[in-house]
Amino acid sequence: MIDVTYPDGPASRTAPPRRRRRTALYSALALAVVFAAFVGVLATRKSAIDRQARSPLLGLQAPPIAGTSIVDGAHLDVASMRGRFVVVNFFASWCVPCQDEQPQLVKWLGESPSHAIVGVLFSDTPGRAKAYLAANAGSWPAVADPDGQLALNYGVRGPPESYLLDPQGVVLAKFVGEVSAAGLDRIVAQAQAAGA
Image 1 (cartoon, rainbow, N blue to C red):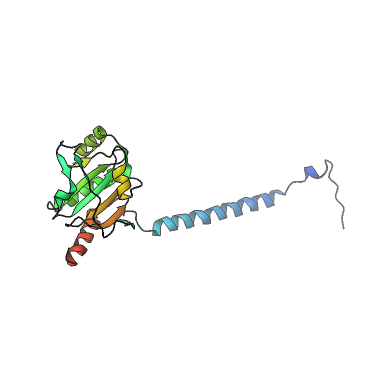
Image 2: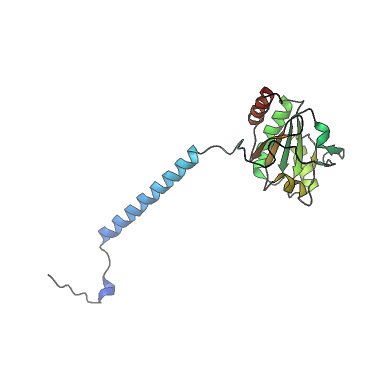
């Protein structure tokens, strides 16, 4: 066995340059594999649009919503909308997914004027929400929820969340995240085929 002494002691011993390069290469390859797996998961996961969620309200009468609409000052009562499919949409002017969703709600209501949409503010001011709806073709009524009681009654954690009610006011579906006109139409068609 050959005994090698280093002039500065053991602290002067470093890995040869070839070993350092190999370690860097392996580290880069491992990082590339992890990144590729992450991209693969994102590319194959289900879209967040039209994502339905469980709710204890499904199949039950929707909690009441009544108040003064921030849009036109008229009295609003969701119970008076019986006979129509109604989307109860919890939204905020500052919410980016709400902004992305807005054209789909406008489209759904435009294609089916016999349906209705009711907006409920979530952690937003009436002035900002009214300006947001006006700027984005939101012609439906909306109510403020200053104490968060409506959000609590519906089990809403953050915007956008929407509930689709059948013509009798029963909750058919809860959507967490953005909803599309096609997704709403699909649930309405299923309900109509079932006799709702």
